[in-house]
Length: 371
Image (cartoon, helix red, strand yellow):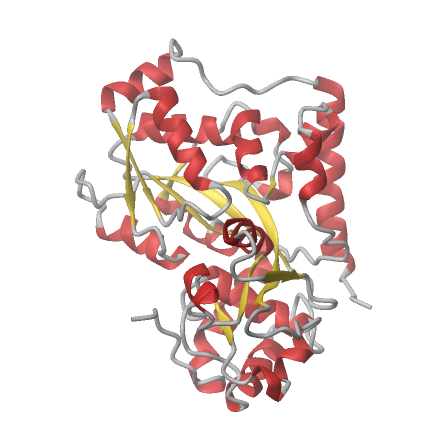
């Protein structure tokens, strides 16, 4: 049975109760800005929006980008689609004095990257601000929680028909040379939180991520960990039969594969870890109005449903369910993630520091992009 610390349970419970209370009282719809809106006109004057690290198969960002372009007739310049949260912040730092195409306007980074880096962000509160749970946003508008998922195993069952049920199973010799992370734990939010999740399944807690490092050290010594950054193509080819990734990415992959290869999503029995990402505008955004419009679009009912279509749990989901605006098919397609742990920002930051600083010495696996 998964144990969850009381502060973490309380945090997420308050998030849901708070937003449901606000929704029940107000019941207001939040529509994306219309073409005549002054913000739209100002954004169209700028003519472009630069995003970074938004793969089209991540949370259905492909549809979000295409819908935004079609709706507002604004060009979207996409940088480094497969970049990490660290890459996004580095791009802001490296382009502070630039208005060129390499300077991002907006970022989508892991929750633990939000508050510590808010000096790199521009404060802005979207119209739907009051429906975002207090624990999932910066009090002064520097960042907004946007969606969350739960870490899972995406398994190519054509290659490995015996799908693991839990983290402990991945240590079995049958998975030798078959398991990979979806990033480098020294810089990637998804990979860092995968290590954190393994900790929860191996005697750790939201306040102690060290057992996750020890677990991956064992996985590496066993020869089961592949030192490559996993992606859907590598899973499809069979080079990486077991990918540790967010449930929404796994479900999107399964839909895309359409049975070729046969694949399966596994929500681990223990160590169920829920990770939220945050959206922010660069303090040095070359196109600040386009950036604000992008935020308004994403946090509208329309934008939140687009994320849900990508199997993500949008931050305003509770508000939208109360108002009955979530299509029934979308409401039913998300997997059961009961018992998932939602660490606080402080716990995430502590775990991030521990994992990034000790991965090399404890685990010793140099995770690289596939050639």
